[in-house]
Image 1 (cartoon, helix red, strand yellow):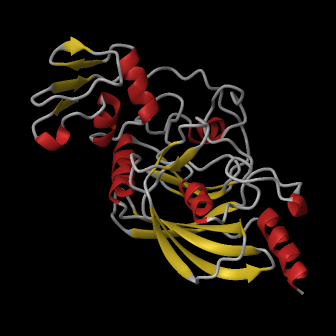
Image 2 (image 1 turned 90 degrees about the horizontal axis):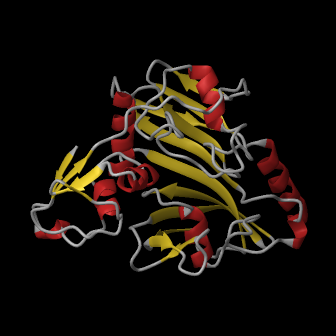
Length: 305
């Protein structure tokens, strides 16, 4: 893949960011390509992601040959919402990690879809995330799209990039939101004080979340959020910044004494609307509220009485 720095608005950008902004490759995969000498600038290998682009630079990105996965396919239960030769729509359960990492080498969604799909998964995001176009956090439940070939992956990734799809989440936040609806338009970047977290940062990437109140409880609010961009932890960061952290989210909030048993944020990806990558048919997928979410709502309803 050849990328040209041919205008002033393309200069002085980090090499990894420039490649990310002009391709469908993941940031992690790009970093590995740079580290391992697969990227040249003006025919010279550049092994630093922090290299800043200059006018007339010619960047050559050579992708690695598809590796044989060391990840072991596992026969794990999958809640399949829809499946054809191009895409697989799943309802991910809460607590399931999407792709393998240190400490999570097995039992992940990738282990499960490798067993289910065999060798029919896109390879664009590298060997660790076959078929994965977007992901949701371990403790977030709900709808996830998996691509079975590279053509479908590129098409769906472009829809995510252009925000031509629709993604809606349901959440419970701490505090009673007084307004009925609103939009948060604040950039998000890595938290400079805690590398595990993201934060609202004027130097971060554009992030827009629309929200509306579904119901208010005593000290809590049940809301719907629509993502107009797709930043890491976007809803969690925006709601914390607004002063209403997600219930159960100890990374961005505190342990709630009324719900000490919770392990992670109460957030459910319940709605995904996109164009089919082959037929261009507009498709809508929905996920019912899982049992854990309903129990919390029932408890809040009881506290309201």
